[in-house]
Length: 329
Image (tube, rainbow, N blue to C red; front, side, top):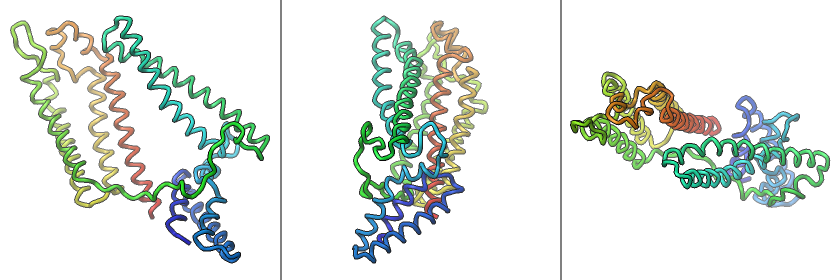
């Protein structure tokens, strides 16, 4: 039996089940596959063909995992749930960007400024996303009920997909090496950000009537917050260097990276929300910028949203690293 193929199948299955069930399910699957392969070999099949056929009989690992991970009573059953997720993601990726672009062009055509044309379609796009999710969900609820009443037909009449084979198994996940390019890129980005913080103090595009440059960033932040953020950037660069030296990611570096991300994004979100990032003098030097220095302005909303997404991405990467390590063990 080819251990790599069976291991890939088991890894693809257990990654979607709760941690407390993972080891038990892995042992059960491994024993079931070994028994089936052994029985097929006794009937005269070659070991590789026997393993391939055994995995084919078990079917799509996502569906198998859904049977373990989801309760029997659900709006969408475990057999349909993987197809539902795939359809929902595909619909969102294909429809929502198109809707946003069309709405932005319409707002711009009506004479609104660039910022309004970029920001106002967000709310309408989110509304479309909700309706799209409801429609897709309703379709799959109906399809799942049809599968329950006609199990022999399943979704074949409405959502026909190619039969699953082990050839469609994902490659075995390996810890992604920390590369020199990633380290250099991170250092360059941090250096560019620090240079921009210093440069905006003397090269600001906003000037007073007397021609004096007005810094964009609140000068009071130099008392603590800017040195603090520079320290976090430095620690992040050192962490990436440590990952390069170890030649692989690890749970410790993933958790440390997520902690550093939180250490930077949480204070920044609070500062933006309190309107403490932009220089209050901008409101006096350029009247059009007065709204940008008020608490809860659209800049604050956009900054908090961006920082939240960045934090979520860092935490998701940390979880994936921990998950890979746990499955490998």
